[in-house]
Length: 174
Ligand code: APR
Image (cartoon, rainbow, N blue to C red):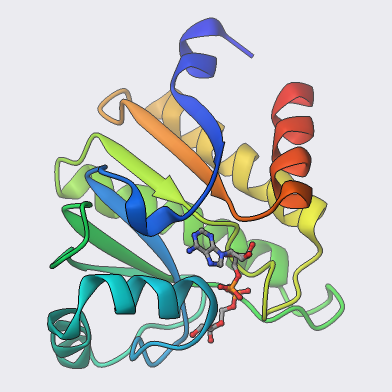
């Protein structure tokens, strides 16, 4: 991978709600009204203002994303991306997951954001196979950053050793 590109993509371990970046991406559901996993953690850390704003957005289709304020989070914004549920791989899951990354990055550029952090979208409750999801995430982010130099840093925040190792491996092979 080109050095410049490599410098703009990072993998870390930890809790995405702690990151002081322009936007953290939430692995949301189509209602945008909260849930478990990282969605639950983000809403808990942001406080009630977040779901109040989400209520006005009237949901979000799978593969797409919407942006809100960050409220009590250290991040300025939350980009709510709705990943696909894994149904075996023959229901356009790969393209829908790719759309989450593309559309989140597009929103970041439209809102003049420079730093954005992603969780491993769809690899928890939605059961998308981890390595396959990581490959899609890394490919989409690399392709986007090659075309858009306004984004300075993309951080993949992994929650658990297995996810961390998988992202490191996929990035090293990219
Ligand atoms: N910080 C970073 N990553 C986290 C955190 C956190 N605080 N909490 C969980 N994760 C990780 C999970 O370990 C997993 O790797 O986020 C990844 C995505 O898992 P989920 O949160 O289960 O999201 P997903 O698989 O996309 O399922 C979305 O779950 O919570 C509901 O409302 C949500 O219906 C939606 C569904």
